Length: 336
Ligand code: NAD
Ligand code: UD1
Image (cartoon, rainbow, N blue to C red):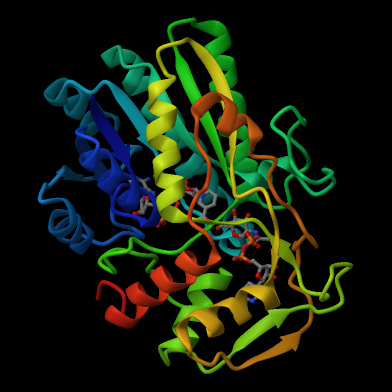
């Protein structure tokens, strides 16, 4: 297949491009580099011996998209491009709706005009909302989201459902990610957040490499076994493989929704201890007050992806820690 990967210079996109190329697909990447790096393309080449076509540009640029579809015979689109910082989305909601919601709509318009109607979309476990019972199952309704970021994901899901209901030619997979961490085992690509990381794993690895002095653990008074929050962490390479599996079911029309997670939860403290144990590097930490909007614990029921896609997250916590550390220690400053 010839696959268009939006946001392919970012964290999850770059790992997916590697898996696509390794599986024999041809890849075109569009990325405006607002949170990605051009160096990613060189690293993908070093891993796979192949270079995807790279177009630096914005998914909101309809003229550019029309040209791209006209020039590249695209069979399917995997759509990662978007903004993902929850706190920033609260401060700048319009920026988030413009990028994530409007950007997705421009992309769908351009796809329809080009006769391309197979789409895999990056959604998030956050669409289950604040009240859902655990584990999260795809049959549950979308809930009340706690940030414009989460709302933008829920809105795009709804837009895509309506599109599939209106036009039977569309085939869409909504992939709800839990907490992707880790890096490619080569140590050549990984997560490279700009500024101070918001998320736990890059924060830990930047403390480990000496870029940050200590980790603040947000709350140790949650109703969990050790009092810290629990999440369903999965290896980014497993997540990438999930997208390839989704491509295979896009022959049938309609919307399918899949949780991509391990199906079990790990506490913040357990993750920190796993990192220390696997890498031998100490992580100074202290407990601080809870972070606004955090839920105590959630994890996936990942049975549907297993049954329908034949997908299961296979790489365990040890690989997640070792691969994160290989990436961070080989690239202390990220791609810069
Ligand atoms: P990322 O920021 O590393 O990658 C996103 C890429 O999209 C970046 O390279 C950025 O430059 C590009 N981009 C952003 N807006 C664009 C636009 N308008 N036009 C073209 N390119 C644009 O993020 P990621 O962690 O790889 O996440 C990928 C997708 O998965 C996002 O949609 C995100 O919301 C979703 N997601 C991520 C997580 C997570 O924990 N990382 C969890 C759930 C969902
Ligand atoms: C967050 C977002 C979620 C988004 C996901 C990926 C919130 C409330 N949720 O998920 O919508 O899809 O990122 O971008 O922001 N932690 C610390 N110290 C830190 C960082 C995190 O203790 O420095 C804790 C958090 O309190 C949380 C856990 O680690 O309990 C995981 O946090 P994080 O990596 O940010 O992921 P989520 O909050 O699950």
